[in-house]
Image 1 (tube, rainbow, N blue to C red):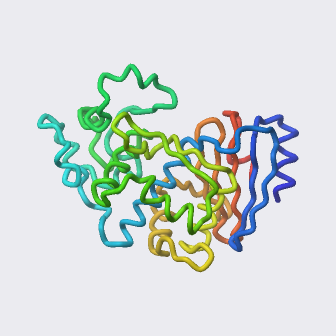
Image 2 (cartoon, rainbow, N blue to C red; image 1 turned 180 degrees about the horizontal axis):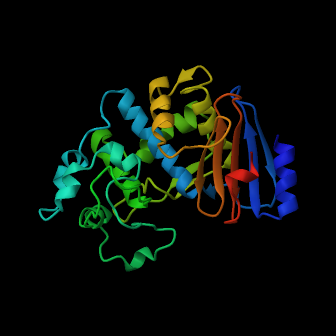
Length: 276
């Protein structure tokens, strides 16, 4: 499969750096299309790792999808927060249905040095929600930054620190780093720097319904919840699911065949259709 994808990439002249193919038996093959730094920003593919961190807490009974965000983060909630915020649940944030009318906290495109405050959580909470939570989808990095703060508040650990022992020990990542806000919390939505072959391992975890080798990392229940609700992984054709990121990052997997594809690139013309 990887040979055909590589051929299409070369024919189209896409600026792809690394292409990886994996399977549910943990076989991973990597192709270097254009040389680049080995550790790359996976941009919004980071959100799939945040979804997985939420799953860890769900499996431990520490979090429920209908929990109100302001209840979890109540000590950070401004007194003048808009009433719609009081209805926002974990489920709403995972689906980008908090009620925003535009994107917010996109540090990849914004000049974050010009933000009016270093307190990103207050910045988000002071944003007036236009739509009733659960009624309108508006993709925004703000939702997943809030989820990162939820993870910290419930677990007492930054999301990177929560995931690191699993990713480094169980999935055997080579290296990773996650961009932080000015207060030192991982962004949750973007800024996760990993190798392509390691990104593929997350897909292997999902095609194996939460298992990696002999270790159960997340429950089969959580995997089904993620796929049924479309928490970041979009259902495509023929049992394929995909999560993309800015500039052509992709993590894709097929629940039937067990195939997994990962890609790091710098090309906005790279789309899911290139791989399947």
